Length: 243
Ligand code: SAH
Image (cartoon, rainbow, N blue to C red; front, side):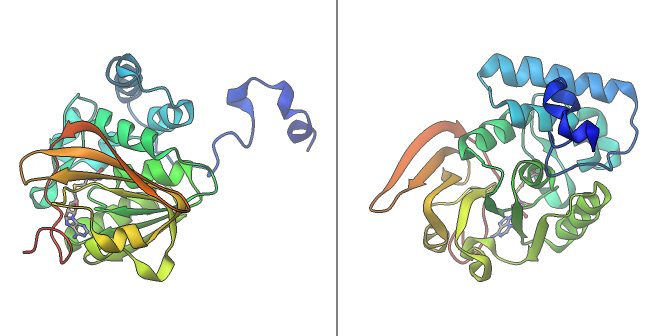
């Protein structure tokens, strides 16, 4: 109690409420992984203009190697996307960081994520927001991600197996929407499910190359801004690339 009352006197890293929602069950790990994460933050993210401190802190704590198949873990902190199960990939750390930074997440936000994949981006969103609703179409990836995220003690995530190009209307509207697979256009149901004052980030383009688009919605208007070129696996579904 006394500790809590005077916690404002402590250095930031010792404040009890600092890392809400708490992310407590990170298993012990060989020290080289922690060092690799610190290098990743410095040389891949900060050096390229990533400045969101809360997010960088979360990325420094999140064991990215646990989201990769056993044989691929050595590649977890490299400056590249890495192939994972079901011929999908975990995005390059810089891509995860720039997308998350441009979402401008606030602690009370409810976020819809389309394309759970490994669950790495999901974990990061969950560490920074109130609730994450994540949709994945591949059953194998869905099961693996649920298992991993439960193992890390992240309890503010809701999972859905299905076609995320239609969003998840039952829990709409969302403050933030992030799509981590590439669509030919912004799926109309996702725009409908974005709240006023909401932000969405989505790669839009053809199957080989896309632009990362930030959508901002306010009372009367919706604006779209293109950020950078990118390459994502396709969003397959009714309102995207039809299978
Ligand atoms: N953010 C993930 C990477 C996702 S890769 C990570 O950090 O690991 C893109 C994911 O989108 C793949 O898992 C793919 O199966 C999924 N996907 C593709 N089309 C989808 C759809 N219509 N609905 C939900 N998920 C979809």
